[in-house]
Length: 365
Image (cartoon, rainbow, N blue to C red; front, side, top):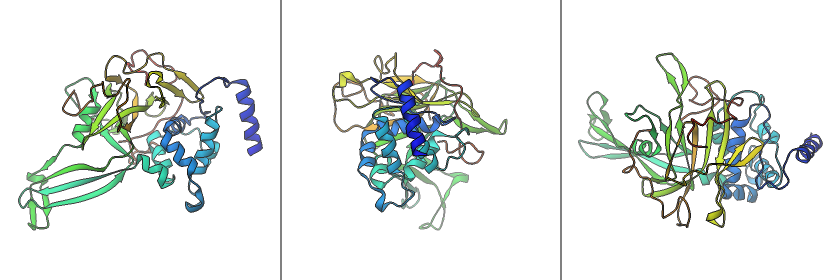
């Protein structure tokens, strides 16, 4: 099998891969654009790529996916690559089945070594406070991403900044919604607030575009335009900078994924956004955030923000205004799950149908 794969790879790159390309794409096996887009983001996340390369699976067991990722990443440095070993390891037996990028982002991280996966690993806690006795309890947990629900708003557009504000807003429980307090031994008014205990190096936000419509008793896709900020401040005062977006085009049962990524460069003035569309990699004609700190998108699904610890010159840095929940309030935004099945999440999708962007989609994400 390896002989055949190597022969096909050599033939494909001789015929189709531009020798001078700076970045290379991934071949689509049928409807695997959901996987390709996530793998490209992981490859272009340098810390993750290096951690996978350093790791040996001797201590992780046979389920560890690091060696397959390292092999794929090595291929991507010089040619258009195949994902057969990754799909086999993930148990994807039908490459023509439509699946969800968010689900496979989570699956890959679940099979990755702790050293690599911790880059996306965050920790939060929900603090419940009794309004009667002020007793406070905590229930913590890990997360790979934060879900932002695209809820109803007075604005035509939805705002990631407002979604973050809503996510961390203190919720009040009173009246029929009172909560039981062990100390009071009774139901009392209470508040619950989400607090980040560990900010991940890379924060992924999932825009909940796939939801169940009780009017029609079926899942539907939300295509509303979203205001996407270049930089974002997360409680407790941690700033993040956008470097990758996974888009979904088309409807619930079909469509196409691609990724838009800004690679890290030594010279900020050389920074460019690239579109990774399966085996095609091109520089965006329109470079986002050149005019404003916010861009609009009706296709953005997964947003990847890198933790900002050192200010650098250039776009999206210290001379740019940081978007915070107190600024730019326009809407509220929440998470999808796996290959689309009612009751299993809000994800879904596949491949054919999104390769040509409409000018109505304002942002080239």
